[in-house]
Image (cartoon, rainbow, N blue to C red; front, side):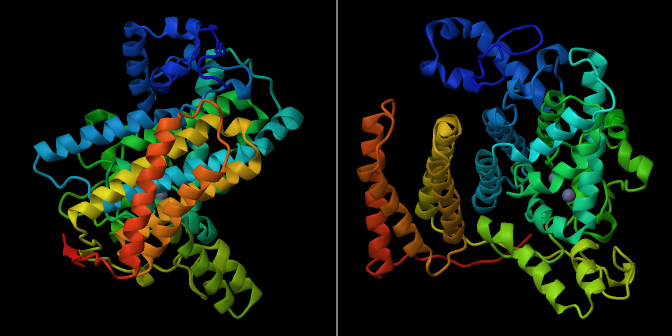
Length: 483
Ligand SMILES: [Zn+2]
Ligand SMILES: [Zn+2]
């Protein structure tokens, strides 16, 4: 759906995002007339408000689920703006700013998840719609403010149980661990998600379908996730009395810690009251530095590996069990469960993580610059796919998506300085050159930009060809840092 289509309660234009402005040249004259300087400021302010769940219910109430804008996908400019501001604050306070390898890995996971959403086209929400259509118990009026608030609280309550299950059920943790795999804690980590996270979670929202209209559910699910982006930061210390009700950076730092007191605590999405009610709340301890990342951290910047390695581990643990009961327990009990122990494992078996080496590999400046430029190109490619995929056939969407995920994987392998990464990069560059020469592209694709991209990728491929036959030597200082 066009973001400027008439669709919400007031019949106002759904200028839900700054993307409306960025796509200005593609708008028709009537739409252009609506995008004035005042509108731009208003749209930007409204977009920033959305990041904090500060929204007008009237502007975000929709009758049909297919009228709901892509609030989350359209928020990427705000994600980038917030991360930029976070780095400025850290820099002013003389704290460490983002590491390029870790930051790009986090954003790569975000892009992989969004690419997955384009492939699945929201199919996981069909069960919700089916239940609502056939088994709903009450007919809440779609344009009634109480319905909007009920949906907001209901979605957050279900998120608490979904998140708790992701930490207490091994096969769900296999996906959710992606979000905990960074040894840093910054807003980019907020975007570090599993490709299959949506499929892990949809069952937990189904009870809402007996009352909450699908459009409200889809709207609030997006705002709930948007809110959870900015709480991933060390730049905000405390929010005073708000800490009692809302999930804040302070509470979420505890959730991401691998210290014993942090494990399996503070699951809340927007509200922290659920943790206080159900006994999973823990306060940040000032005398103990939080160690971020998994208990057994993986030394890798390869997003494909980080997305998949744990599922392999769950399968291996299951195969190693002797009885069927234990095999099922290995899949559905907690990650630390062992035979003969309680469902969530024994306290005495839990590992006390001590301050440890942070995984880091130093690459030369030119290599980091190269990877940064190519990563920006992948973002551009994703943006093209996101705006065109509805008019494309599923095979082309899949091909496009695989190229994006493959590109992010190769970039991760280069950050890891893997021996064969240069050969994969050579193949990736040549594939794009081949595609631009052989494939037919829509009329509106800019031919000059296409030629420039082709030349850039050809030169990149040539460089990695020389590198792979050892004509050039990429020298790196493999260095693991102590924090
Ligand atoms: Zn978690
Ligand atoms: Zn988090």
